[in-house]
Image (tube, rainbow, N blue to C red; front, side, top):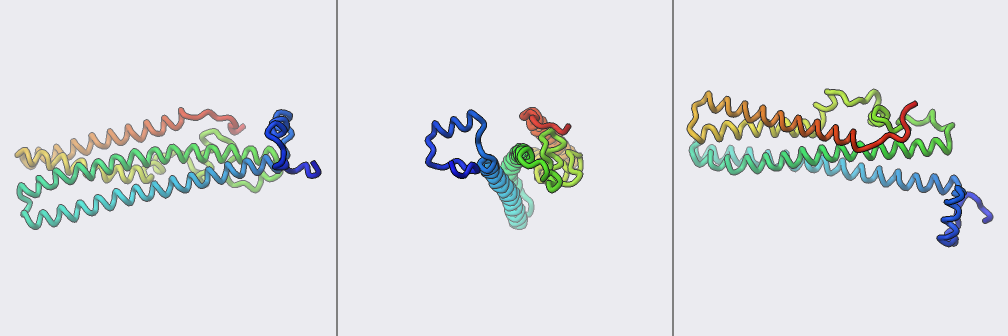
Length: 234
């Protein structure tokens, strides 16, 4: 081997395994392997975020189309029995798409947590090879929860405002409104009074709030339980 910075591709698999077993992999090869994994995580993370935006946009499109359709039917039927029947057929479909969107967005957020976790560990490996470069990294190279959140941005923490402003929460809020409208519509179709209609709508919305809240809490807890820190902040 004239150049010790690379492992020649002509080496047999046995020779490569021997180098690995004796810890003789050159630093250049280590960096190449780490960089390949880093780019893979970046590409996966980008694809997941594109899916998140696409799913949210798809839900808004379905909701907008349903609202336009309901408005047209309302004009044609003067909010009569045919309108209520049409609404009872359309709104559950909108709600189903919305619930599926919230669940998928929660899964994407959990997956994104793991991709950032992986990139933090890779940065830790980079700095083991070149510790003098630590001052140039703005993202963390530790993998405890606080360090992972720090990689999302300056002073980023899992605070209430961050959760409320998240895309899953905003989509969930729209679903809560749809649940309330659907509950009030069902009560009205059953012949209930206006007061009962309002109470039914509020009750359905409160049930939806509890359901989506429990779903968000479960998603966060599952993400926390699903990993073990290898390089915690000292």
